[in-house]
Amino acid sequence: MTKPMPLSDFTRLPRAIQGVVVDGLAAAIDTVADAGPASHRFLRYQWFAAAVAAYGGHPRTLIVTAEERPVLALPFVATGPKMLKLASVPGCYWPFRSFALASDAGEDVLGEALAVLSRHVRALRIGPVHDDDPSVAPLLHVARARGWAVIDRFVAQSYLLDMRAAQADGTWPRGSTLRKNRFHEKHLADHGALKWSFVNGSDWPEAFDDLAAVEAKSWIADRTDGRDAKFTASGHGAFWRAAASDPVLAAMMRAAVLRVDGVPAAFSFDLDAGDLKYAVANSYDPTFAKHSPGKLLYYRNLVDARARGVTRVDWGAGDSGYKRTIGAEAGPVIRDWLLLRPGFPAFAGRLLAPFWRRSGN
Image (cartoon, rainbow, N blue to C red):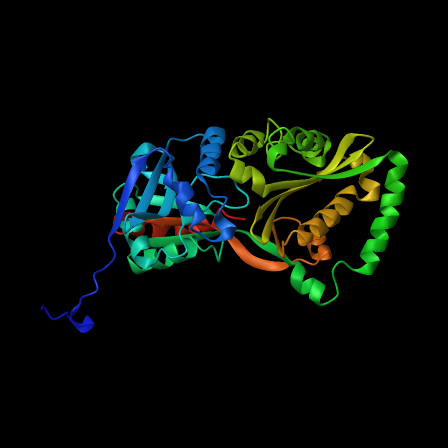
C-alpha cells in the first residue's frame, strides 16, 4: 500500500491567471459585475453598451480570468488621435465611470490586467470616480508599483447622507423640516390636485418621458443649451433609455414623481445599488418654485427608500447647500485618472501632469 504524502510535501501552485483583450463588449461583464460589491453591480454589459450607443466609440474589453473564472472586465474605447493609442473607460458621467472587478480578484489579477493593457494602449483614462472606488483604487496601487505613471485631476467633492446614523441621533428628518414641508404642501395644493408616485422596473423606459417633460421646463432648459439634461433627446436621454433595456438595470432605477392636476411638476431619479442610493437627478417646474416642490418630493423619496432598506445616499457633486440641509456631509473626492504605461509614456505623462491637473475643476 502506498503511503500518502504528508501535506508539508505539497507545493501550493499560483492561481492560473490569464488576460485577453477582445473586440466589442464581452458578455462576461455581467458575470464579473455580479461578483463585485453591490455598489458597482450596475456596471453591466448594457450600461457600457448604452454609453457606446449614446456617446460613440468602438469598444474593446479587457477580460482577466482566475482559474477560468472571469474576475475583471474593463471596457475601453479609443480617445484622441489614433497614433497616440489613448483610451478611456466608457460610461455615463454619473454615478461614475469605473469597471467591474470581482471582490476576491487580488493584486495578481490587476497585475495581469496592466500587463495585457500595456500591449494595447499607451494611456488609459478612468473617471470620474470616488477616491475609495473599490475597482480603481487597488488598480492605481498596483500600477504605481509596476512603474506606471498615475496622474489625478480633481473633479469635485462628493456628499453623502447616512440616514441610519442621522435617524439614530434623532435628527432626521427634523420635526421643523416636516412642519415646513406640510406648510408648503398645503399651499402647493392651491395650484391643483397633487399626486405623489414612485416608478421603477417595468415602468421604464416610457416613464423617462415624464422626467424629460419636467426638465424641458426647468432652469436647465432656460439657462443652458440643455446638453446636461439627463432625460431629454438633446441631453442624455438616449443613454438612460438604452440602459433601461436591461431588466436588472431597470430594477435599480427608481424615481419619485409629483404631478399637479395630472401634469408632471417635479421628479427625483436615483439608482439603487444594495443599501446605497445614487441620487442622479432632481428637477422641477419653476412655476411652483415658491412652494419648494423639489424639496417636498425628495424628502418623500428618501423616506420611501429608508423603508426599503436603503441606508446611505450618495448625492455626488454640485450644489452643497440643499444637500447639507438634508443632512449630507462631505464624502470622498471625485477625480479623473490617467494611467500611462512604463517607459516613455510614463516619462512624458509625469512632465505633462501639471497641465492635466490644471484642466480639472
